Image 1 (cartoon, helix red, strand yellow):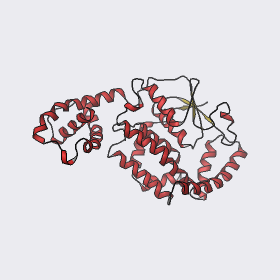
Image 2: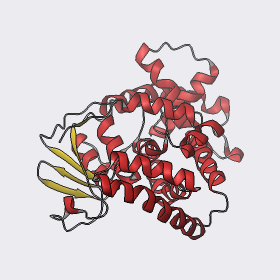
Image 3: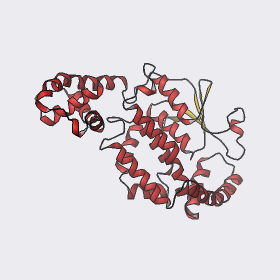
Image 4: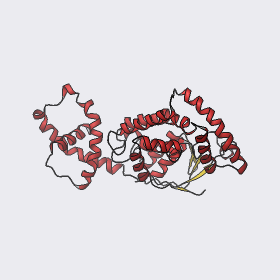
Length: 319
C-alpha cells in the first residue's frame, strides 16, 4: 500500500495536480519521490504500465494516502527524537576503529551522552573484565553490548520501541547497505590509510595521539605500528582482491553516491542506519590523506557535509 501510495504521489506531481498540500507535506514530497522512483520499475514493468485513462481514477483515489504515509513516517521517526535517555553509557573503543565509529555516529545523531574509555591495543587491560576481547564494547546502565551492528540494532529498538529495525522505510535497502559497509567498505580502508610509509605514519600519529598510550608506548606504536601495518595492508590488499587502493576507495564512494539515487540521504529526507554506518566508518579518515583524496576525487563530499550537519557535535563526555 505504501508503494502504491508513493506511486500516486509521484504521478500527481508530474501531472501538476492542482490539489494543495500544506508546508509539511511539501517538505516531505521530494523525499517521497526519491523513494518512489526506485520501486516504480518493480511495480509496473515497461511492458505492463498502467493505461493512463483507465487507471486515472484509481491513481487519484490513492493519491491522498501518499502524504498521510509520509506524515506517519515523519511522526514516527523524527530526526533526533529520542525518549530513551540512559543514565550511564560507556564505550570501550579504539579511536580509529571504524566499527567503534559506527556506534559513535549513532550515539551522536541521537544525542545520547556517553563516556569514552580508550582501550590500549597492546595490553587491552581496560576490557580484561569482559569475556569479549574486541571493541567496541558498550555498557548501557550496566548492560554489556557487543558487535557494532548488534549494538545499533538494540539501541534503535529502545529508542523506537513501537518499531523494529525491519519496519524502517526501505528496510531491505537499509540492511543491504549496512552489510556492504561491514563486508566491503571497511576492507577498503586499511590498504588506503597505510598505502605508503608516509601515510602509515600519518595514520599512526593520529591513532597514538588520540589513543591510550604512555609516552614510550606512543613512540613504539607510532613507528613500529606504522611499519607493521604498511606490510599488513599489502596482505589485506591481496586478500580482498584490491589492485589499486585509491581506485577501490573512489569506486566505493561513487557506489554509495549512486545508491542515493539523487536523494539527500539513503533514508530520503533524513539519514537512516545505513547513512550513519557509512558516515561513521569514514569519519576517522576524513582528515587523513586518503580521506582528503576521496573527497577531492569523488562526488561523496556533498553527502558527507550534510551528514556532518545532521549528526552534529559529539555527545561524548569526559569519563
